[in-house]
Image (cartoon, rainbow, N blue to C red):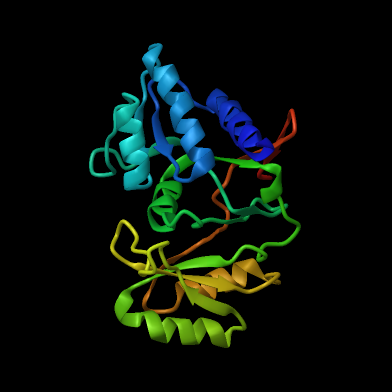
Length: 227
């Protein structure tokens, strides 16, 4: 599939940002999985890095490929993180969390010197919001938060598994998928959500991505954050 080829191409292009001796944040999701596999090949050939995964899924994948894995307990600063995104706008603001790992992903991004986002061309948008915004919530507050986000104009749905049970994150929380349509002011919405007690984290990543690598057919388009 073209999408899979593009995801792998973007992941391959991101390897140039990883240097010997670095601590590397390992993202979660289909494009990040390509990166972890390609990184594993480099490690087999002698690249020395230590990985900090953003999910149990990514941790298991990294370990299966022989990538040395550590935690934030052992190291609180990350040189480079490579992760995917569900949407990217021209200011390199992101919606993330389609894979359900947004909390750990945002924590890792927050202690990363350089965040490299890898994506196929379909993830590039003029304005965020077509993709539903994931919001991780404490179960106790779930109904309250759903009502409050609904009052902001979103259609709110509890994320379910294919078995018909609520999706549970690595930190044992639930996710509300909030369909806003086009988000007029992503910065203001991010602040509003961050201020709501009971929201653990939301999927708006603002001012975090340093570089975005889009694969479009055979071409890699590199966008860098200004300043």
